Image (tube, rainbow, N blue to C red; front, top):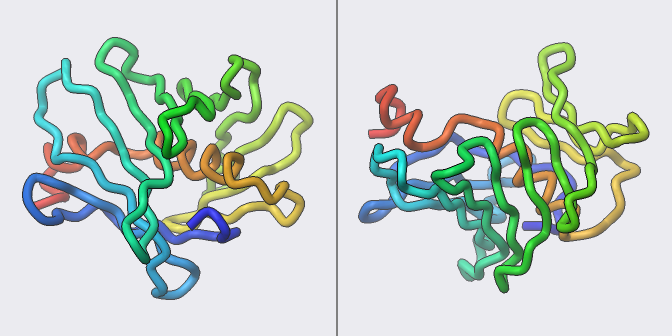
Length: 165
């Protein structure tokens, strides 16, 4: 999943048991991974955790976790639970708290722009695309994917609105 340079993220949908997921596909229909989480209860104490997994074998790639005490802060973890970075509101930080990039709405899309005003990636509709000059780094790609997923509506929001059965 992290070897791709562009993803299409499908809407949240109900999965088996008490679980919801989003499929991640390459441009087209080839599934390369998914993001899943337990269907949330609406209690405000419940932390929210998205698990990133490969489509082929279901292996765990990483997670983003939002705790109950800082609702706008997401912690981004790799598969062995080591910190990769954090997303706080529109800002993305490295594991040491240094600013990396910020989400900016621009002309019908959202761009992830770094401190030097270079565009890392952009999202238009359900497509996330990395800039051609973005370094080939799986942790960097995990940060980008987490930034876009963490900035969207949560499954709890969608369930309350009736958008997930």
